[in-house]
Length: 208
Image (cartoon, rainbow, N blue to C red; front, side):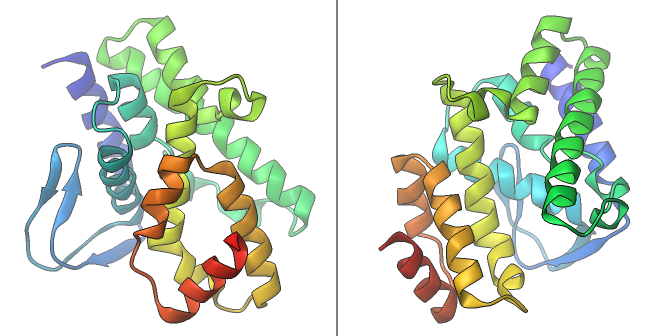
């Protein structure tokens, strides 16, 4: 078994421990593509990882193994640090997100080394998970692909539920920020996502 396969198994084994289950209709996305199957429940973080991998195939079909691992590990053990563990303020939210990224990066680096990757290779995966290169704007194409994929999964899988209970103007502001982070390729894929009529209207408002 290759180091990549070992690392993927370790990451997915961690995802499988998420106690929050979600129903999956139809196929199940995997790192090798989409497999058909009956409706069933799987841990949410495994579902999220599957979505991330599916959109990576669309955005960058020939992604490197390190990017594929970083994509797969974006929410590694995220359920262990719920939002409620930080203050319910804007500063608290940003501290939560930053803390998660650091923690997830450390965890995936450890798993990669356990699987047989060098410390330098493991650190590259961790750097992508922390999104350091993207925030610094240093032209790291893999960091941009990861950000595109995360935004696409938000729009496809989380946007409808996220919209509930929030004012339209707040949602439009968030969508504008999401759109600004995406590359032209990512935006093209986003425009092809199936959405409800109201969600589509808000996206159009945000990008107009």
